Length: 112
Image 1: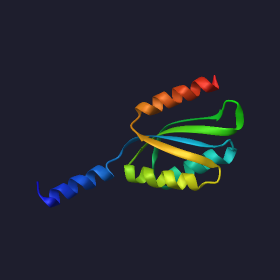
Image 2 (image 1 turned 120 degrees about the vertical axis):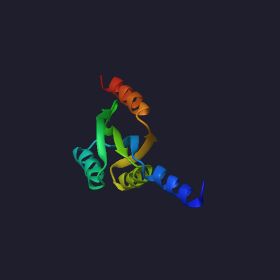
Image 3 (image 1 turned 90 degrees about the vertical axis):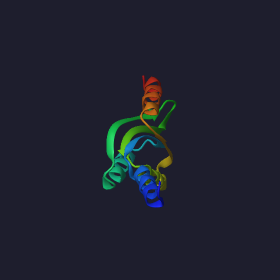
């Protein structure tokens, strides 16, 4: 394999779009979800699924779990941009959609 071919393969793995699960813990404020969606829309990130609710026992805190379709590089940039929002406590992302199912099920149990 030549150096040029290897570089092309490495570039393709970085720019290849895939599914990511994003978990965001923030203040339960009506404008926070709007700001999160606006950040994703500005970067042209496709939202496949979204679950949002308040934390049981603390009505001031909320959690949003999103299934997104984008690149790993863009996911890292979005994570840092979301954490700059004053209301966002922290954001974590995981590759794949398997964890989305687990997290949304866990959070749905808390809501019900």
